[in-house]
Length: 161
Picture: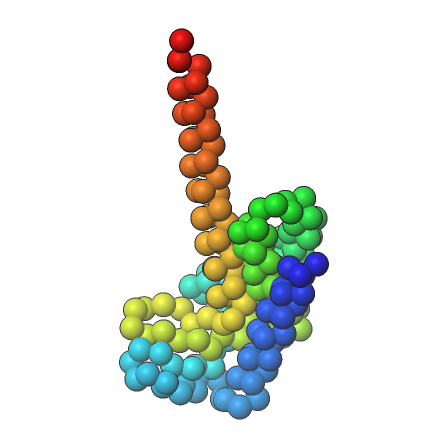
């Protein structure tokens, strides 16, 4: 249950920050917090990361409904896998946050603008999705390493006289 509460908190933080950007900044306005490194920039995205699939609103809405349903169905089945649960929690919150934008506005509000490296402007939901995917990858690698260790141990035990 705590995972769904945290996902809801992610959605609330995402929506509140986007609302603040929309209400206090003009589109394309930028506020340098660290000049040339990190700015708050009011931006809208009608596509996905790096601007791909522009104006594919209904595609993203359908995919998000499927992904959210799959996560909600799957999470209770992996109770002991804490890292994966936290990963799915962050993905769930981020997906719902961006889903709300696409459903209600037809575009996603982005504002986190790191300029030190050329990187797309993003938002809290995007951050949570990326961190969640990272946690899932880490947990998958950890499980693969454990399985390999167990298999190696089995072979060593079988080889003993």
